[in-house]
Amino acid sequence: MILLLMYALKRSERFEHQRVLRMLIWTAVAVLVWDIVFGYVQLRGIMPPYAYMYGGLVWAVALVVAMNRLDFLASYVKRYGTLYNLNPSAILLVDDQGEIESANPAARTLFHTVRVVNERFVDLLPEKKRDEWSAHYDQHFHAQKKFLEFETKIQTKSGQERYVVIDGDFVYIDQKIHGMILIRDVHSFKEAEQSIRFFAYHDPLTKLANRRAFYEQADQALLQADTVALVLIDLDGFKGINDTYGHQVGDDFLIHLGELLEMATPEAGLASRVGGDEFYMYVPNVDADDIVAFVERLQLLLTERPFRLGRETIPIRASIGVSVAPDQGADLDTLIHKADQAMYQIKQHGKNDYAIYDEVLHGPK
Image: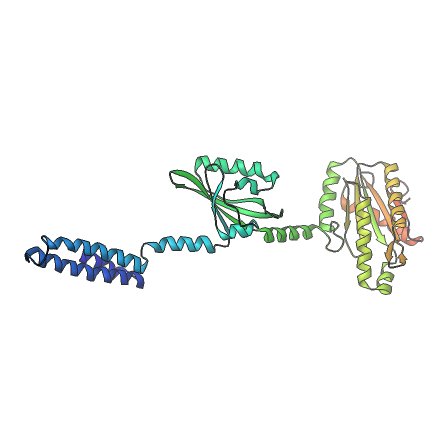
Protein backbone atom coordinates (compact mmCIF):
# COMPACT_ATOMS: atom_id res chain seq x y z
CA MET A 1 0.00 0.00 0.00
CA ILE A 2 2.83 2.40 0.88
CA LEU A 3 4.56 1.71 -2.44
CA LEU A 4 1.33 2.29 -4.39
CA LEU A 5 0.73 5.58 -2.56
CA MET A 6 4.31 6.73 -3.21
CA TYR A 7 3.92 5.89 -6.89
CA ALA A 8 0.66 7.88 -7.02
CA LEU A 9 2.35 10.82 -5.22
CA LYS A 10 5.15 10.85 -7.77
CA ARG A 11 2.68 11.06 -10.65
CA SER A 12 0.33 13.55 -9.00
CA GLU A 13 0.51 17.15 -10.22
CA ARG A 14 -2.19 18.77 -8.11
CA PHE A 15 -1.21 20.15 -4.72
CA GLU A 16 -4.40 19.10 -2.94
CA HIS A 17 -3.97 15.53 -4.18
CA GLN A 18 -0.38 15.50 -2.97
CA ARG A 19 -1.52 16.58 0.51
CA VAL A 20 -4.01 13.71 0.65
CA LEU A 21 -1.44 11.17 -0.51
CA ARG A 22 1.21 12.34 1.97
CA MET A 23 -1.27 12.05 4.84
CA LEU A 24 -2.23 8.54 3.72
CA ILE A 25 1.45 7.51 3.32
CA TRP A 26 2.33 8.58 6.86
CA THR A 27 -0.79 6.92 8.17
CA ALA A 28 0.09 3.70 6.31
CA VAL A 29 3.62 3.80 7.74
CA ALA A 30 2.19 4.23 11.25
CA VAL A 31 -0.26 1.35 10.71
CA LEU A 32 2.57 -0.84 9.38
CA VAL A 33 4.68 -0.14 12.45
CA TRP A 34 1.66 -0.79 14.69
CA ASP A 35 0.98 -4.10 12.99
CA ILE A 36 4.61 -5.25 13.23
CA VAL A 37 4.98 -4.29 16.88
CA PHE A 38 1.70 -5.64 18.18
CA GLY A 39 1.64 -8.56 15.76
CA TYR A 40 4.75 -10.04 17.36
CA VAL A 41 4.72 -8.53 20.85
CA GLN A 42 1.94 -9.60 23.18
CA LEU A 43 1.51 -7.06 25.98
CA ARG A 44 -0.96 -9.08 27.94
CA GLY A 45 -2.70 -7.16 30.64
CA ILE A 46 -1.70 -3.87 29.05
CA MET A 47 -3.18 -4.12 25.51
CA PRO A 48 -6.31 -5.98 24.37
CA PRO A 49 -5.70 -9.28 22.62
CA TYR A 50 -4.89 -9.12 18.92
CA ALA A 51 -4.07 -5.39 19.21
CA TYR A 52 -2.53 -5.34 15.74
CA MET A 53 -6.02 -5.58 14.29
CA TYR A 54 -6.74 -2.06 15.50
CA GLY A 55 -4.37 -0.78 12.82
CA GLY A 56 -7.09 -1.34 10.25
CA LEU A 57 -9.44 0.86 12.27
CA VAL A 58 -6.80 3.59 12.39
CA TRP A 59 -6.38 3.29 8.62
CA ALA A 60 -10.15 3.61 8.05
CA VAL A 61 -10.33 6.68 10.33
CA ALA A 62 -7.39 8.25 8.46
CA LEU A 63 -9.19 7.79 5.15
CA VAL A 64 -12.36 9.41 6.47
CA VAL A 65 -10.42 12.34 7.97
CA ALA A 66 -8.44 12.89 4.76
CA MET A 67 -11.51 12.79 2.56
CA ASN A 68 -13.57 15.09 4.75
CA ARG A 69 -10.81 17.60 5.45
CA LEU A 70 -9.54 17.83 1.88
CA ASP A 71 -12.88 17.22 0.13
CA PHE A 72 -11.33 14.50 -2.00
CA LEU A 73 -14.45 12.64 -3.12
CA ALA A 74 -16.89 15.54 -3.05
CA SER A 75 -14.80 17.68 -5.41
CA TYR A 76 -16.40 16.09 -8.48
CA VAL A 77 -19.88 16.66 -7.10
CA LYS A 78 -19.00 20.26 -6.33
CA ARG A 79 -17.60 20.76 -9.81
CA TYR A 80 -20.84 19.56 -11.33
CA GLY A 81 -22.86 21.68 -8.91
CA THR A 82 -20.83 24.78 -9.74
CA LEU A 83 -21.23 24.22 -13.48
CA TYR A 84 -24.94 23.52 -13.03
CA ASN A 85 -25.63 26.62 -10.96
CA LEU A 86 -23.37 29.09 -12.75
CA ASN A 87 -24.01 27.93 -16.32
CA PRO A 88 -25.56 30.82 -18.33
CA SER A 89 -27.59 28.30 -20.33
CA ALA A 90 -30.77 26.86 -18.87
CA ILE A 91 -30.43 23.21 -17.81
CA LEU A 92 -33.48 21.03 -17.20
CA LEU A 93 -33.81 17.44 -16.04
CA VAL A 94 -36.96 15.94 -17.57
CA ASP A 95 -38.45 12.59 -16.57
CA ASP A 96 -39.99 9.98 -18.87
CA GLN A 97 -43.36 11.76 -18.68
CA GLY A 98 -41.89 15.05 -19.88
CA GLU A 99 -42.14 16.66 -16.43
CA ILE A 100 -39.29 18.86 -15.22
CA GLU A 101 -37.62 17.40 -12.11
CA SER A 102 -34.94 20.04 -11.63
CA ALA A 103 -33.86 23.33 -13.16
CA ASN A 104 -30.79 25.51 -12.65
CA PRO A 105 -31.00 29.26 -11.86
CA ALA A 106 -30.50 30.20 -15.52
CA ALA A 107 -33.69 28.29 -16.41
CA ARG A 108 -35.69 30.35 -13.91
CA THR A 109 -34.22 33.52 -15.41
CA LEU A 110 -35.00 32.41 -18.96
CA PHE A 111 -38.63 31.56 -18.19
CA HIS A 112 -39.15 34.61 -15.95
CA THR A 113 -40.34 32.53 -13.01
CA VAL A 114 -39.03 30.95 -9.83
CA ARG A 115 -41.18 27.87 -10.43
CA VAL A 116 -40.21 25.63 -13.33
CA VAL A 117 -40.01 22.27 -11.55
CA ASN A 118 -43.04 19.93 -11.78
CA GLU A 119 -44.24 21.54 -15.01
CA ARG A 120 -44.30 19.74 -18.36
CA PHE A 121 -41.62 21.15 -20.62
CA VAL A 122 -43.89 21.08 -23.66
CA ASP A 123 -46.24 23.48 -21.86
CA LEU A 124 -43.45 26.08 -21.81
CA LEU A 125 -43.46 26.25 -25.61
CA PRO A 126 -45.83 28.28 -27.82
CA GLU A 127 -48.74 26.13 -29.00
CA LYS A 128 -47.62 26.19 -32.64
CA LYS A 129 -44.23 24.72 -31.64
CA ARG A 130 -45.44 21.93 -29.33
CA ASP A 131 -46.19 19.22 -31.90
CA GLU A 132 -42.85 19.77 -33.63
CA TRP A 133 -40.95 19.51 -30.34
CA SER A 134 -42.92 16.45 -29.13
CA ALA A 135 -42.24 14.53 -32.32
CA HIS A 136 -38.54 15.38 -32.22
CA TYR A 137 -38.09 14.62 -28.51
CA ASP A 138 -40.08 11.37 -28.53
CA GLN A 139 -38.05 10.07 -31.46
CA HIS A 140 -34.74 10.66 -29.67
CA PHE A 141 -36.09 9.58 -26.27
CA HIS A 142 -37.08 6.11 -27.48
CA ALA A 143 -33.77 5.71 -29.32
CA GLN A 144 -31.87 7.24 -26.35
CA LYS A 145 -29.92 9.21 -28.90
CA LYS A 146 -28.65 12.69 -28.11
CA PHE A 147 -29.55 15.63 -30.32
CA LEU A 148 -27.93 19.00 -31.00
CA GLU A 149 -28.90 22.44 -32.28
CA PHE A 150 -32.69 22.03 -32.29
CA GLU A 151 -34.11 25.49 -32.97
CA THR A 152 -37.50 26.45 -31.56
CA LYS A 153 -39.18 29.05 -29.36
CA ILE A 154 -40.06 29.05 -25.68
CA GLN A 155 -42.72 31.14 -24.01
CA THR A 156 -41.89 32.90 -20.76
CA LYS A 157 -44.35 33.26 -17.91
CA SER A 158 -44.81 36.90 -18.94
CA GLY A 159 -46.02 35.72 -22.37
CA GLN A 160 -42.90 36.71 -24.30
CA GLU A 161 -41.65 34.34 -26.99
CA ARG A 162 -37.89 33.86 -27.36
CA TYR A 163 -35.82 31.97 -29.90
CA VAL A 164 -33.73 29.19 -28.34
CA VAL A 165 -31.43 26.35 -29.40
CA ILE A 166 -31.77 23.07 -27.49
CA ASP A 167 -29.23 20.28 -27.01
CA GLY A 168 -30.25 17.08 -25.25
CA ASP A 169 -28.97 13.74 -24.01
CA PHE A 170 -30.38 10.92 -21.90
CA VAL A 171 -29.22 9.45 -18.58
CA TYR A 172 -30.46 6.83 -16.11
CA ILE A 173 -31.46 8.16 -12.68
CA ASP A 174 -33.13 5.86 -10.13
CA GLN A 175 -33.44 3.17 -12.80
CA LYS A 176 -35.44 5.49 -15.08
CA ILE A 177 -34.39 7.24 -18.26
CA HIS A 178 -34.31 11.03 -17.99
CA GLY A 179 -33.66 13.74 -20.52
CA MET A 180 -30.97 16.33 -19.77
CA ILE A 181 -31.87 19.43 -21.78
CA LEU A 182 -29.59 22.42 -22.25
CA ILE A 183 -31.29 25.54 -23.63
CA ARG A 184 -29.37 28.47 -25.11
CA ASP A 185 -31.12 31.80 -25.53
CA VAL A 186 -30.32 33.02 -29.07
CA HIS A 187 -33.12 35.58 -29.30
CA SER A 188 -30.81 38.58 -29.74
CA PHE A 189 -28.74 36.79 -32.38
CA LYS A 190 -31.88 35.66 -34.21
CA GLU A 191 -33.31 39.17 -34.25
CA ALA A 192 -30.00 40.54 -35.53
CA GLU A 193 -29.92 37.84 -38.22
CA GLN A 194 -33.48 38.70 -39.27
CA SER A 195 -32.60 42.39 -39.38
CA ILE A 196 -29.57 41.69 -41.57
CA ARG A 197 -31.66 39.50 -43.86
CA PHE A 198 -34.45 42.11 -43.96
CA PHE A 199 -32.17 45.00 -44.88
CA ALA A 200 -30.39 42.89 -47.48
CA TYR A 201 -33.66 42.99 -49.45
CA HIS A 202 -35.36 46.14 -48.17
CA ASP A 203 -34.78 49.86 -48.26
CA PRO A 204 -33.81 50.97 -44.72
CA LEU A 205 -35.79 54.23 -44.95
CA THR A 206 -39.15 53.27 -46.47
CA LYS A 207 -38.97 49.51 -45.65
CA LEU A 208 -40.03 48.81 -49.24
CA ALA A 209 -38.17 46.21 -51.29
CA ASN A 210 -34.82 47.43 -52.59
CA ARG A 211 -33.40 47.16 -56.12
CA ARG A 212 -31.95 43.69 -55.50
CA ALA A 213 -35.26 42.28 -54.22
CA PHE A 214 -37.22 43.93 -57.02
CA TYR A 215 -35.02 42.47 -59.76
CA GLU A 216 -35.15 38.96 -58.28
CA GLN A 217 -38.91 38.92 -57.76
CA ALA A 218 -39.75 40.71 -61.00
CA ASP A 219 -37.70 38.15 -62.95
CA GLN A 220 -39.71 35.38 -61.29
CA ALA A 221 -42.98 37.15 -62.09
CA LEU A 222 -41.99 37.42 -65.77
CA LEU A 223 -41.42 33.67 -65.89
CA GLN A 224 -44.65 32.72 -64.11
CA ALA A 225 -47.30 35.31 -65.10
CA ASP A 226 -49.03 35.73 -68.45
CA THR A 227 -48.66 39.51 -68.38
CA VAL A 228 -46.69 41.87 -66.12
CA ALA A 229 -47.07 45.64 -65.94
CA LEU A 230 -43.92 47.50 -64.92
CA VAL A 231 -44.51 50.91 -63.35
CA LEU A 232 -41.71 53.48 -62.88
CA ILE A 233 -42.37 56.43 -60.57
CA ASP A 234 -40.12 59.46 -60.38
CA LEU A 235 -41.00 62.31 -58.01
CA ASP A 236 -41.34 65.79 -59.44
CA GLY A 237 -39.74 68.60 -57.44
CA PHE A 238 -38.37 66.45 -54.66
CA LYS A 239 -35.10 68.39 -54.60
CA GLY A 240 -37.10 71.53 -53.85
CA ILE A 241 -38.69 69.82 -50.83
CA ASN A 242 -35.25 68.91 -49.48
CA ASP A 243 -33.90 72.41 -50.11
CA THR A 244 -36.92 74.16 -48.58
CA TYR A 245 -37.70 71.98 -45.57
CA GLY A 246 -34.49 70.03 -44.96
CA HIS A 247 -33.47 66.41 -45.43
CA GLN A 248 -35.34 65.13 -42.38
CA VAL A 249 -38.64 66.32 -43.85
CA GLY A 250 -37.54 64.89 -47.18
CA ASP A 251 -37.03 61.50 -45.54
CA ASP A 252 -40.44 61.69 -43.85
CA PHE A 253 -41.95 62.57 -47.24
CA LEU A 254 -40.40 59.44 -48.80
CA ILE A 255 -41.60 57.27 -45.91
CA HIS A 256 -45.14 58.60 -46.42
CA LEU A 257 -44.94 57.89 -50.15
CA GLY A 258 -43.63 54.37 -49.45
CA GLU A 259 -46.67 53.66 -47.28
CA LEU A 260 -49.01 54.83 -50.06
CA LEU A 261 -47.27 52.67 -52.67
CA GLU A 262 -47.45 49.65 -50.35
CA MET A 263 -51.14 50.35 -49.88
CA ALA A 264 -51.76 50.62 -53.64
CA THR A 265 -49.81 47.51 -54.65
CA PRO A 266 -51.91 44.34 -55.06
CA GLU A 267 -50.90 41.29 -53.05
CA ALA A 268 -49.30 39.57 -56.04
CA GLY A 269 -47.30 42.67 -57.00
CA LEU A 270 -44.36 44.49 -55.44
CA ALA A 271 -43.40 48.11 -54.74
CA SER A 272 -39.75 49.05 -54.30
CA ARG A 273 -37.45 52.02 -53.85
CA VAL A 274 -34.50 51.70 -56.21
CA GLY A 275 -32.93 55.14 -55.80
CA GLY A 276 -33.24 58.50 -54.07
CA ASP A 277 -36.70 59.44 -55.37
CA GLU A 278 -37.21 56.59 -57.86
CA PHE A 279 -39.68 53.79 -57.24
CA TYR A 280 -40.44 50.66 -59.28
CA MET A 281 -43.58 48.54 -59.12
CA TYR A 282 -44.78 45.48 -60.95
CA VAL A 283 -48.32 44.09 -61.21
CA PRO A 284 -48.81 40.60 -62.70
CA ASN A 285 -51.70 39.23 -64.78
CA VAL A 286 -53.35 42.48 -65.88
CA ASP A 287 -54.91 43.47 -69.20
CA ALA A 288 -54.84 46.91 -70.81
CA ASP A 289 -57.93 48.21 -68.98
CA ASP A 290 -56.61 46.95 -65.64
CA ILE A 291 -53.32 48.75 -66.16
CA VAL A 292 -55.00 52.10 -66.85
CA ALA A 293 -57.34 51.64 -63.90
CA PHE A 294 -54.45 50.76 -61.59
CA VAL A 295 -52.32 53.77 -62.56
CA GLU A 296 -55.29 56.14 -62.27
CA ARG A 297 -56.13 54.76 -58.81
CA LEU A 298 -52.52 55.29 -57.84
CA GLN A 299 -52.60 58.91 -59.06
CA LEU A 300 -55.83 59.53 -57.19
CA LEU A 301 -54.34 58.08 -53.99
CA LEU A 302 -51.27 60.31 -54.25
CA THR A 303 -53.50 63.34 -54.83
CA GLU A 304 -55.87 62.60 -51.96
CA ARG A 305 -53.14 61.72 -49.47
CA PRO A 306 -50.56 64.55 -49.62
CA PHE A 307 -47.78 64.80 -47.05
CA ARG A 308 -48.76 66.96 -44.09
CA LEU A 309 -46.16 68.98 -42.20
CA GLY A 310 -47.97 70.50 -39.25
CA ARG A 311 -50.67 72.67 -40.82
CA GLU A 312 -48.88 72.80 -44.13
CA THR A 313 -49.67 70.39 -46.96
CA ILE A 314 -47.01 69.25 -49.43
CA PRO A 315 -48.56 67.67 -52.56
CA ILE A 316 -47.13 64.50 -54.07
CA ARG A 317 -46.29 65.00 -57.75
CA ALA A 318 -44.85 62.16 -59.79
CA SER A 319 -44.13 61.26 -63.40
CA ILE A 320 -45.13 57.66 -64.12
CA GLY A 321 -44.04 55.43 -66.99
CA VAL A 322 -45.50 52.01 -67.74
CA SER A 323 -44.46 49.09 -69.93
CA VAL A 324 -46.09 45.68 -70.27
CA ALA A 325 -44.69 42.20 -70.83
CA PRO A 326 -44.73 40.36 -73.10
CA ASP A 327 -45.94 43.03 -75.59
CA GLN A 328 -43.05 45.43 -74.98
CA GLY A 329 -40.41 42.85 -74.06
CA ALA A 330 -39.80 39.62 -72.21
CA ASP A 331 -36.80 40.65 -70.11
CA LEU A 332 -36.71 43.10 -67.24
CA ASP A 333 -34.04 45.44 -68.59
CA THR A 334 -36.01 46.00 -71.79
CA LEU A 335 -39.20 46.69 -69.88
CA ILE A 336 -37.43 49.14 -67.56
CA HIS A 337 -35.92 50.94 -70.54
CA LYS A 338 -39.27 51.35 -72.27
CA ALA A 339 -41.09 52.38 -69.09
CA ASP A 340 -38.31 54.93 -68.57
CA GLN A 341 -38.88 56.28 -72.10
CA ALA A 342 -42.57 56.69 -71.38
CA MET A 343 -41.79 58.47 -68.12
CA TYR A 344 -39.28 60.75 -69.87
CA GLN A 345 -42.00 61.88 -72.26
CA ILE A 346 -44.10 62.92 -69.25
CA LYS A 347 -41.14 64.79 -67.80
CA GLN A 348 -40.85 66.67 -71.08
CA HIS A 349 -44.53 67.59 -71.25
CA GLY A 350 -45.57 69.10 -67.93
CA LYS A 351 -44.82 66.26 -65.44
CA ASN A 352 -47.23 64.86 -62.80
CA ASP A 353 -48.92 62.45 -65.22
CA TYR A 354 -48.49 58.96 -66.61
CA ALA A 355 -47.77 57.33 -69.97
CA ILE A 356 -47.98 53.71 -71.15
CA TYR A 357 -45.38 52.69 -73.73
CA ASP A 358 -47.01 51.65 -77.03
CA GLU A 359 -44.73 49.69 -79.37
CA VAL A 360 -47.10 50.15 -82.32
CA LEU A 361 -46.88 53.93 -82.08
CA HIS A 362 -43.12 53.70 -81.37
CA GLY A 363 -43.45 55.76 -78.25
CA PRO A 364 -45.48 56.47 -75.14
CA LYS A 365 -49.22 56.77 -75.19
